[in-house]
Amino acid sequence: MKVSASKEKILKKIRQALATPVPVPFPQSEGNDSVFQPATEDPEITFAENFTNLQGRFSYCLNELELVKQLKELCATRKWDNIFCNDSALREILSKNGFIVNYSNDLPNCDASITDCEFLVARTGSIMLSSTQQSGRTVSVYAPVHICIAYTDQLVYDIKDALLKVKEKYSEQLPSLITLATGPSRTADIEKTLVVGVHGPKEVFCFLIEHS
Image 1: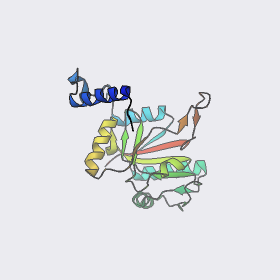
Image 2: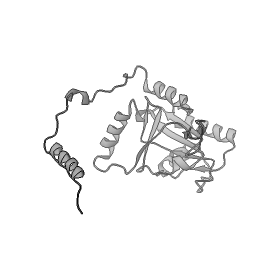
Image 3: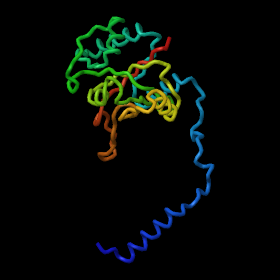
Image 4: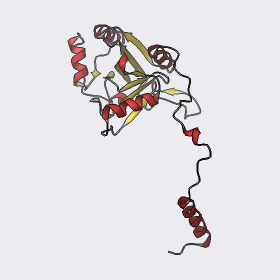
């Protein structure tokens, strides 16, 4: 295939640039310092404020017994009968503290799904999830309501901190998927009108338990 003179000229310039790369004019600008203000409050408060500002529903629990009490009240109030949770460790924790339900096996038609998480990011009010969790990739997305259960030792300030902890936790075997869920699903693609629950859950609850 014959290459035109103009195209060959461009390719020649690219080859020359790769052979003699231009030094970065401001080497100190690529530092590791965060561009955001450091935390001024406890991470629990920062997360709760940012999470609720994004239409998330936050609840603080002193222990697992209080968690179960609040879960029971929530299910009774909403009349939820079909709860999806395929995390055996999480189901055991809930069961031993009195949350006895017939878990649904039908994720698309359940009332709500319950998962754990990798970490909570206080600065953005986000829940970090990964494919390595027993809940898998889809549980937090397909259900109409996502309930996340986390402990205070899973709280970090920034996304960078969460990613570093994930790397430390999994070493060289990083999950194939790491994602951030920041409040209920929302879009404003249609006539710039905000619509909640189009591509994911309409509601997101986070129950934060004091780590003993």
